[in-house]
Each structure stands twice: as structure tokens, then as C-alpha cells.
Length: 260
Image 1: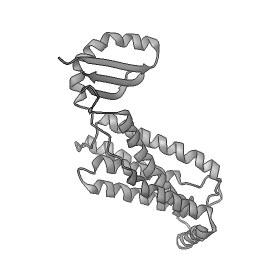
Image 2 (image 1 turned 180 degrees about the vertical axis):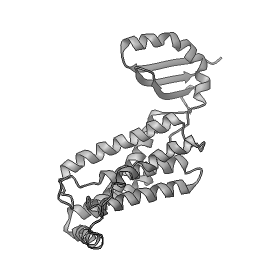
Image 3 (image 1 turned 60 degrees about the vertical axis):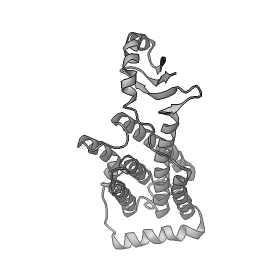
Image 4 (image 1 turned 60 degrees about the horizontal axis):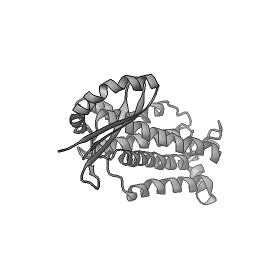
């Protein structure tokens, strides 16, 4: 006969935790139903999927940090300024989030991605959080002056990294439905990077490295998700262990359900 252990680790006000104790029994009864709604994994992440973003980061760093590629940065800027001296737009401030928001828009239209809505929200938040944690400190550490001379926070491009993180998120959620979703997302991300250069806010190397950081951030988000959300994996005794996020009005935590 199967036995079930239900555990919820919550981080929040103690009074909120006490209030939840009365609902644990009913949660156990419905746990088997809820488990079927959880995906087995966020999306498989393999080491080779980090080759392209690491290469982009390396190339962008070489363009900004070495004499060998620095001329390419300056040449690209000069050609853009010469051909489009009065160019200026703020659409890049919107485009950076467009691929990510498209995931939720598509779900609203009834076109479901790989994961449930709640897990998609967690994955996208993780992706943007990892991206900010990587890019923001690096901007201050590298101290690269922007092409327009406004400050020294040029490398890497934050708008571009966010756009490519969003594009990779869209690709992963809808790659099993059609590759065109990912292609469209990456087209928008590329346009964001190009517009950052046309606005004279970033060098070519900033944009190339930003693309790498964005893709890597989303890959890391899915990798972390897969590690935390074990899904349907058998333990040594032949039981099944599940982990999932637990959120209530005033507390947050990790839920665990174990069959043996």
C-alpha cells in the first residue's frame, strides 16, 4: 500500500504558517491531482548549449578590450553615425521584453507552451534575475565609456542581454510547437541590439557580448529549475519524489510530496 508524505517549507510570517496547518490535510488528498499538472522538467539543458553564448561573450570582450578588435567597434560606429546622423528612437526600451511577454500573450490566445503558466512566470523571472546579476556588476567593473560619452556603463549591453534572454525563453517554451516562434523572438532581439548601436548607446562588442549573456542567463534559469524541480524521478526504494514552488498570500516556500 502506498504511503504519502507531504511537506511544505514556507518562509513568511509565523502566523501565516499556522493558518496553513488546517489546510494541509486537504492538500494531501488533492496532491495526486496537482502533481499531474507539474511538468517533468523545465526544458533539457546540455553543456553544448552554452558554447554559442560563451563564444559571443568572448568575441564581445575582445572587441571592447583588445586592440585587435577595437578598430571594428570604432569603424561600425563611424559608419552608423555617417549614414544616420539624426537617428533616434525609444522603441528598443519596449522590444527588449517583447519576446518574453509574447509567451504569456500566446497562452492568453490558447497556444500553450511547454510549461504551466506559473512555472513560465518563475522561469522568466529567474532568467531576468540571473541576467541582471551578471550584467549590472560587470558594467561597473569594466568601466567602458559609451559611444555618446554619457557614462562609463557601456559593456555589456543590458537591453540586448534582456532581449536575448527573452528570445531564448520564447524559443524554449514553443520550440516543440514551431521553430518560427524562436526565430521571431531572435529577430526582435537582434533588432534591439542594432537599435542600441544606431542610438549611439553601445559599441558592437557591447551588443555581441550582451546577446551571449542573455542566452546564457535563460539556459542557467532552466538548468536551475531542473535541479530544483525534480519531477518524476524514482528514489532508491522505488518511490517518487516531487518538488514544486509553494506560494500563498503572505508566505513563499518549497513544497515536497513523496510517495513510497
